[in-house]
Amino acid sequence: MKLLILILLLAVCRAVQAQQIGLIANTDGRKTISLDGQWQTIVDPYESGYYNYRYQPSDNGYFKNAKPKSKTDLIEYDFDSSATLNVPGDWNTQSDQLFFYEGTVWYKKSFDYPRKPDTRLFVYFGAANYFADVYLNGEKIGQHEGGFTPFNFEITKLVRDTGNFLVVKVDNKRRLDAVPTLMTDWWNYGGLTREVKLIETPATFVHDYLIQLQKGSRQRVSGWVKLVGEKLSQRVTVRIPEAGISKTVNTDAHGFAEVDFNAELKLWSPESPKLYDVTIEAETDQLRDHIGFRTIETKGTDILLNGRPIFLHGVCIHEEAPLRGGRAYSREDARTLLGWAKELGANFVRLAHYPHNEFMIREADRMGILVWSEIPVYWTIQWENAATLENARNQLGEMIARDKNRAAVVIWSVANETPLSDARLTFLKNLISHARSLDATRLMSAAMERHYINDTTQMIDDPLGEYLDVLGCNEYVGWYDGLPEKADRLEWRSKYQKPLVMSEFGGDALFGHHGDAGARWTEEYQESIYHHQIAMLKKIPFLRGTSPWILTDFRSPRRPLPNIQDYWNRKGLISNRGEKKKAFYVLQQWYKQL
Ligand code: GCB
Image 1: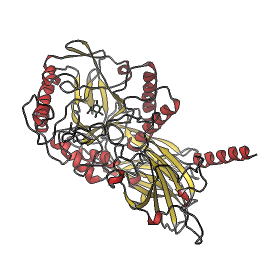
Image 2: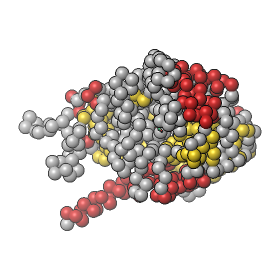
Image 3: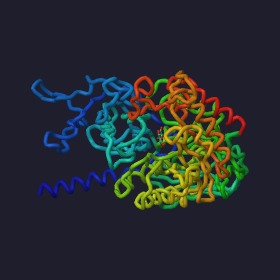
Image 4: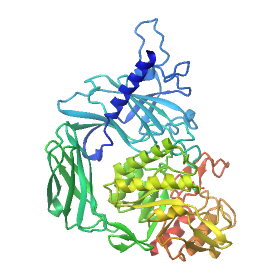
């Protein structure tokens, strides 16, 4: 009997969660109420707010936010007298005690919300690293896996006019079957690392849309709109006033309509990052966005932007906050990082190794910087685990759902330095076709490895190359692979007639540490790597892009060397304090010539 009740309960829980709709696109264009600021938190290394002493999920966990009702009541936690953490923000850099912490922290935020008739309410998380269990007023409303993509849950029926409490259990324990897995070369910053907000919508609303140029066309805008709610069949008008466009379509019984029209548009490019005001007007909802229009394709070994060959001269960036360290999360952070990339002469950034916050993409759109965006399928993933694949597909889907209307994004990448095997190829092929089914317009890539076929010849022949549009390749000639001069002797070959982006190269230098060019960790050694690399890169006939590793120093638990690394990967062209190293100027000089 007990078992039956349990099964029934599970089924009901599933049903409640299944009703959740997917990611709400363009939260910028919506009425939102920010939940950023101080949240009450409880650090819970043993997860005793979740499991009872028999290690079974407890009905009375911290999510109940219980208070003693009498002086005899025994309750062993209290959010309201616990420490607070700022949201957005990682916990590691907000408290010395949490610097190396990997485990569970409970977050609680109270809010009032005067409910309005005929509206729906969602709670939206920009990201929570890594697992999030979310509860409102003591009830579970959903869970999410993956530390770098947004998610939302509907709370229309649960929210009260006053005294709501939102509780989130965030757990950043690394796991072998997760994406990423146990081993990474970046800090596992935990917490509610991006903004949290309430989103209010009409009862039937524009849930998502795609408004982009059709692949291969510079006039034809092609896409779709999707409504969610009761009144699914509606007239929806897409307007681009500046281009004189007003196109009305009727959504079908599922709330879906395709949108196609010709338009004379000034195309988006790094030189002229033109964004148009676009409005989507349904009978019950209206939404506004700023959208750029451009095409991206490949032809032989060329990458074509708006039909013309382009060289992607860029740099890799981690989502490490400039100057203060910790996760970057704000528009100001994005402006600083992308501003430095511009100063370097970049027209392109590789956002490593996971989807960055939305400000980065929106600012890249405004500043005219092309973006490579990727998911954390990094090093050793459990290729044969179906749940791991599902998780990677989901993170890929959420990345594309959020950013598919951004002109800046030209490349989706599915993996970084993954070791060759049949299982890995099957896994990555699955991701590539999934991405293509969600977005047919962008280029697919992956950062691969290469190998030597003799002492001086580097070969790109990873079987994955066959399924990519752009080959990505990481190499550390001069750092992990020989000394800087080794680059002078190398010849590069590829099995594929496709463009290559050298997606990583570089070496470590501590800012202000000087010596001769043969001494590791000095700015001179790093400078020498860049001199030799640039000379080598110029000779690769099919090279169409570069994103050296990396714009700024970033924290990594793998880098303990005292007085040099101190848990920072020092391959930055700029230090963690914003100081430019010598190699910055070497690269800048090359990029300014391009
Ligand atoms: C790589 C990885 C990157 C590391 C870098 C390094 O190949 O892709 O995540 O941080 O090397 O510094 O070793």
